[in-house]
Amino acid sequence: MDERVVPVSCYIRTLNEERKIGAVIASVRGLVDEVVVVDSGSTDATLAIAEAMGARIIGQAWLGNGRQKRFGEDHCRNDFLLDLDADEVVSPELATEIRALFAHGSPPRSVYELRLVTVPPVGKPWHDCGVRGRHKLYDRRVVRQPDHKAWDQFKVPAGVKVGRLASPLLHYAFGDLSHVVSKLNRVSTVRAEETWKRSRVEVALRVLFALPLYFLKHYVQRGLFRAGIYGVSLAAIHAYGRWLRDAKMYEQILAHTEEDGSLDGCAPLDARLQARNDNEARHGRVVVGPLAAVIGAEPIHEAADALLNGRARSKARRPH
Image (tube, rainbow, N blue to C red; front, side):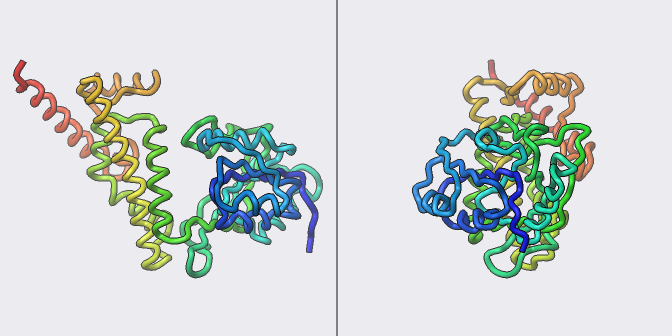
């Protein structure tokens, strides 16, 4: 077996990850030059397991998804980095591919996309459904993780070619369905708070109509129909988790409206969003993004106009 160590630092964010942290570190021991664990306060056996397996542990209170990764990047001694979550295991085949990249020096690409293959709690890995590409192996001199609390996936800079590795990165994403529900509930809260606020009408339309579309995205587009009844269950839960972000965002809009008494209740987070909202108001239209792309813009605009006109009539009828 090829046991060459490549000049790569692997960093892993942890918080009570005893379920899989041992398997994750074991999968890269003998492959990468170092393993850096950035821990935000684990109280289970995570740190003991990581330390026993030779990882370098750095404590850091939670900074947010992207910023915690950037902290990890800053504490690595190599420029080429392998970004792993605490439930992602490098398969032996993927380890072989990574070694081959460094066999003759630096790899030909600065960013590599890995195939994230879900491993369900029961049964074999889902190689033919739900597979996602993730930019997990990269040169930090070329690209960094986003300086953001919610988002932790960087955009590849213009002109940078991405390499793709064929072997799987095994994702032990959940222990059971209740784990998925809990995880999505937590993520939806963060995304609702940190994502740019959309207009009240747009979010309302998403709450009313988008849930079936979210389900179809996971069930059909991501191929979860191939996973049988289990796939139906996961597609429904993931759709609900995505819809929950919309519902929580609408709740925040209502709370903001209650505070400032504004009709719109959609205070923009920056000048770009303000400009977009102003433009929409001038043209009497509401941009609804993916929803319009799926079922057509005109029906959505008609519904939005009806809602806006109804609100205006309601306002006009209020006693002064």
